Image (cartoon, rainbow, N blue to C red; front, side, top):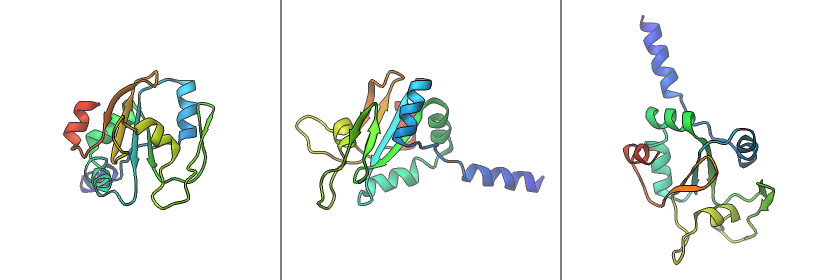
Length: 145
């Protein structure tokens, strides 16, 4: 009995969101459309780290995202080319803190500078359902999902 409760606790603490790459997302959406959860972050963003630590580790969040969404997380300073939906996206800037084209396309707002954290929720047709540009709690995120 002790072993099973220790084992259950250990397995719960190791639960994670099943993040996928853009290429995996592209294939998955073609095979079986499903809502999409995208999280843009950067190493220097303190609120991004706080979301990863305080929200994405909560069991209800992990279960809900893994069950109902394809999930992608991306460091906005990523340097490699990403091919998504037949289009190549790059990070052409060589300066420090440069932003990749993909987050610029998906998470930019009219008349506002690009900011993090940025969370986007799409429906199964890859139409935007929600865009969040601030810190949120797990309860707030569950309400959006």
